[in-house]
Length: 69
Image (cartoon, rainbow, N blue to C red; front, side):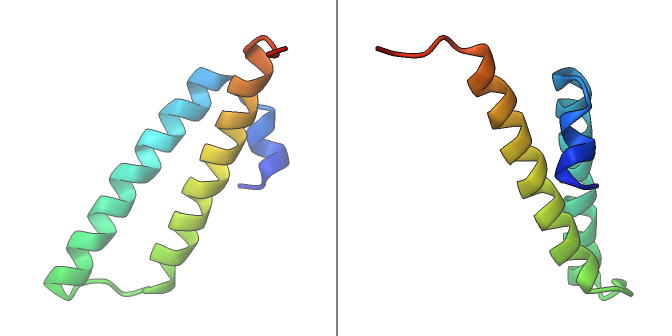
């Protein structure tokens, strides 16, 4: 997903998708250990998706907090 698509989601939906992606990454890591991983690039793509989700989520949280000063 692109950052623009993620920004259109509700924070709760973004949290749900982030948790789902983390579980999927764990499954991929188990596949690496067991030798069943067919697409090693999937880990890289998923890690970047997770980073993108975290970035957008933190942007949303930052807007919700009052500014200091």
